[in-house]
Length: 147
Image 1: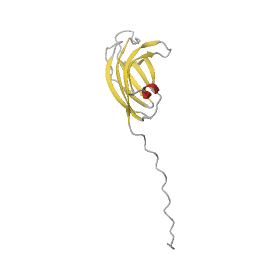
Image 2: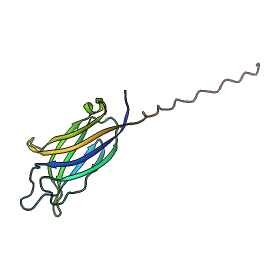
Image 3: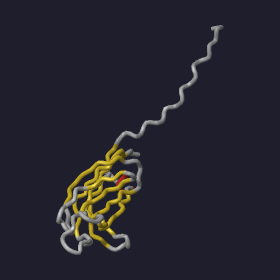
Image 4: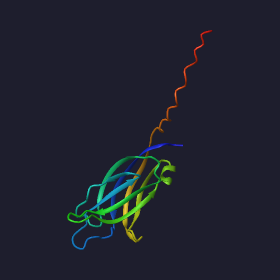
């Protein structure tokens, strides 16, 4: 069985995003969450419903079952607005040969309504499995003066 030590993730773009602005255009960015690790794309200013990021990150893989993609609208004077998210299950990716996915995923809002699509690439990078824990040292041989 292959051991994967990292995931290389690219957030390419999004389309048909849920509009969170009353006036003006949205400034979307994407958060990529895997376990306790969080990566973030740059904000695409005035991209509105069709941002293009084409940003790549590499994160350490420690057996997490999913990657979460969240798309947010950056706001200057208020809290950023949640647009939508999707959880990608890693099992099918890790068992494919090569361990790679590229495609669109459907974003949903908290209420389960559609929020647009995000285009991503994810590739698992092979690495050496962690070294086993060292065993306790054995006791030195007993002294035998008769020998």
